[in-house]
Length: 115
Image (cartoon, rainbow, N blue to C red; front, side, top):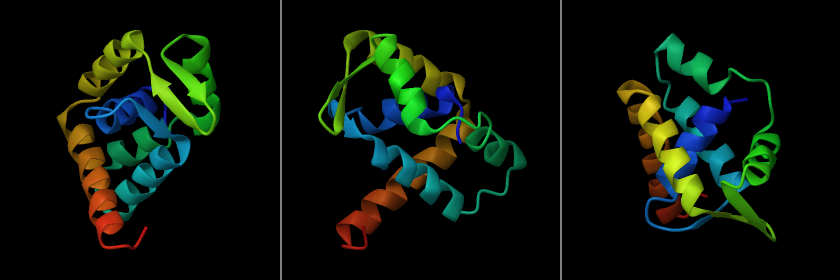
């Protein structure tokens, strides 16, 4: 399972143009990033570093006030936007590129009706 910083970075990416998201979307983006076969060992290690389920990380973010749970969706708070943006920047450009690729792959597959 990815580290909380990676989960926060993914949240920053997917909420750049909206306020809410589902936990499954984070899982999907990370799985698709793996599918892209990023050869960098350090990327794979970062994606699998904490051993903590994404849902558990999200509950920690709720407890910290970064997101709010609303049914099966999560809503990013103003404080969360700042924290997640910092997590995104702190990941580094190579990690950003791999996860952005996973997100674009998700969008293309969704548009093609494959997801």
